[in-house]
Structure formats: structure tokens, C-alpha cells
Length: 110
Image (cartoon, rainbow, N blue to C red; front, top):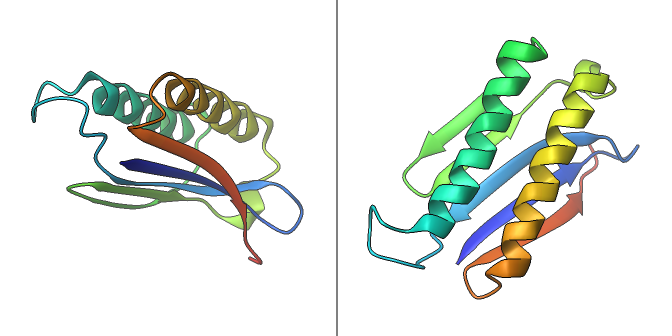
């Protein structure tokens, strides 16, 4: 199961997202569900860096992608739009493939 969490701070502003696991919807290298979620999240990462100019803290390893940004950037309209679009896309994929993808929003205190 691919688990995707979009985190919000105490003011309900997007603060990070993390994806862990694998969708296991196909053979390695042919899993279109995993590829779709990965493409959405990588596009969000690129958009945040290149378009919004946000300095990201990124941790990436096989089966893990975690992207965080500073509190000072959380009200930026471009950041909010990019993250909301990624969240919407991942939620749609999770609705289509509920046995393979879980998407949720969690709060945090930072």
C-alpha cells in the first residue's frame, strides 16, 4: 500500500507531504498507480522549487518521499495552489485504486 499524508500546521496551512510504501498494483517498473502518484508528487516538488521559489527540505529513498517547507512560506498563494492540486490529484487516484493508495490529511503542531 502506498500511503500519502498531506500535513497541515496548527493554522491549517500546508506544511509538508510524505509518501511511503509501494502501490503494488503491478510488476516493478510497470506499476502505473505508483507511477501516477510519484509523477504528481514530483511535479509538485518541482513546482514549489522552480515556480514558487520555495526552499524545500526533501528526504528521498526507495519507497519514501518527504517534502517540507518553512513556516514563513506557508501562506504563499503559489504554494497553497500547488499543494492543493497535488492533494486533489492523489485523492482522486486513491478513490480509483483504494486497495493500492491511501491519501489523508493530518495536523501537526509545528
